[in-house]
Length: 87
Length: 185
Image (cartoon, rainbow over all chains, first blue to last red; front, side, top):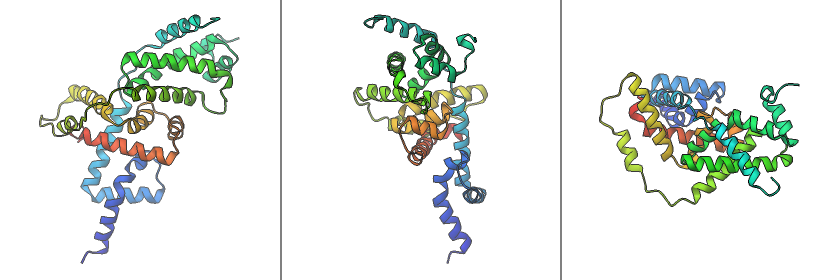
């Protein structure tokens, strides 16, 4: 028969993955945060998901620099306005 | 009186609403690169992103007198851009199912890449994985995680309730994570 600790582990294992974005965005209440921390301390699988999500967010934030197109957009915007009737 | 380039965005928006074209163009110079990059991130080609950015700017300029300042100016501009990009994407022929490519990426047997090459490879793989994400999952990731918009602002741009936005954001992140497993371990 499963112990209370095992039952809690299973329940938290089902719950945790769906909360990891909120956890990383600091959008989870204090109780929820404690629950995620407790479970990821105990569970290598969920700890791995959390780790890879962190790396993903870092990589997304460092994404490639935008192309310098703003001046061209302004030139085209002016040209489009001049083409309009009364422009 | 401060030159146009020294004005804050808030002041420029106020002047532009009163018909000051220089003020509007200064806003475009400040934010046009990011707007264009976001359109590229939505999956548009460089030429399509140019056209949609142009259409967005013209629409925004014409509608500025009706713009209600209590809505964020950039939320409004991005919403126009997003809707226009969606229209453009919906006119494209359906793309083939790329799930096999994605599986290939996940199951890539090569050893984990190193140092600088690792970063370049991850960036390239990230771009590929993003382009393969369904548009309704890609847009939240793009606005929140790449653009750095707040949850409320990004949800407003996509005209979603915050809870629905967060759910799509999480699904998008989890799908990217799965596609990029080899790089994120």
